Figure 1 (cartoon, helix red, strand yellow):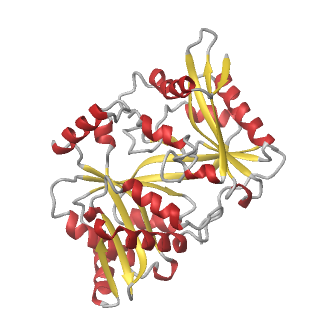
Figure 2: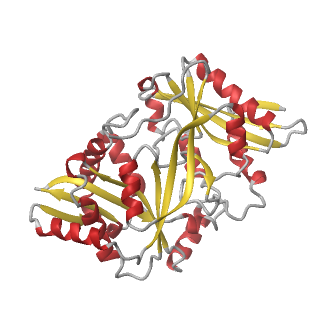
Figure 3: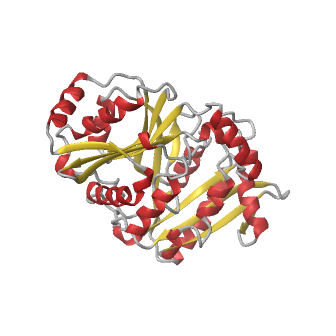
Length: 386
């Protein structure tokens, strides 16, 4: 087998081609947009290169056929926040061959060790956790936009190499017209009667305000999580800018207390319902097809990107209040049939309890693995959020 570092434009093109052979008979696979993957490795587009570095490889068999790919990377902002300095690997694709997988895992380990790392997480993203994070181990159905999808045998490849579960991640499904449980309605009504509370959906013409509110809530809600770093203003702006072309105002909700932002519920249309028909291409012809399918009403599913309430207002009914506010508007429409909540880590039992008590059902399970380079050291799972 021949391992090659991605250095040229042709190498980068081959990196995109590797999955085509692996998933050629898999009806559930949705080819990610080439432009989305290219952006991850573009030093001008991915802000993580400002405080990190990344490398890629492709693997061929002895006949020159593409059989694997992988990337390794370091986010120096978070690498040292763990007991062992930790890098990451991702965008892993491989034939069902333990030797091929080991070649790619080895080169990632050696590169990270040379950079001072003592562990590696994978498969993860060189970017935010809302994209390409974790290995799918249960629920092998069509993936939501920018979520990982992989063959079941990948689990054996990772665990056979010595990766251990750092945390599990659960996605949940709920029909849009599902009735919210009565206890949530009562709590939401109590909040609604208090004039200090209010909720509203986003307005694109005031996006700068909501971007700041999003950042404020995000930093307060996730501040106790190990490895967390405050979201900077530029980062929040980039996130909102990236979703602006696809956001629908009535799918993104904020809650306030005395006009201070305390919670959000961000949902987006499930674009993979269209992208599945585009074969990874969003060139001029792809954009025409995208608009055609959008107008034809192909999208009838939403996905919940992120839900957050600041600690001071958790458990008071604000969760139900913001959910009911969104439901009162969305359920009156006929367009959307299903909602899939993107992953919630098992380190967040409060949020798991919340979504399960709403009557949702677990539909996918992912695992984020960690591999300690010195196996004599004690392995510990991600601690729960308090």
